[in-house]
Length: 125
Image (cartoon, helix red, strand yellow):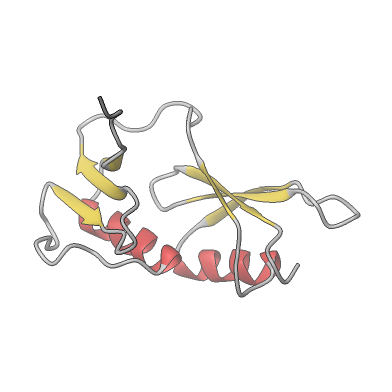
């Protein structure tokens, strides 16, 4: 008997799911599904490497509390500072900087709908 696999990680959003999916698509460098268009009730960021997709679904109720689940991102070809600057330019906002004097730690950001994620120190610092 085989165990289940994670097919999608689903985000509720009150705005256009396509817009939020576009933010994550640009941030992660993963494509949007060819089937999704602006105004659709859901949008999917696919993982060509076979990992779970990120599914964004429109809901009526807004976010009211801190996420119980979030992503910790590790830059591969940028420094943490470069990745944070890129995320901010894409529409994220910075919530906290937990960088320690020795360079460890992380920066807490939020996507355009307020979903938190962290950027850790990357391969280049």
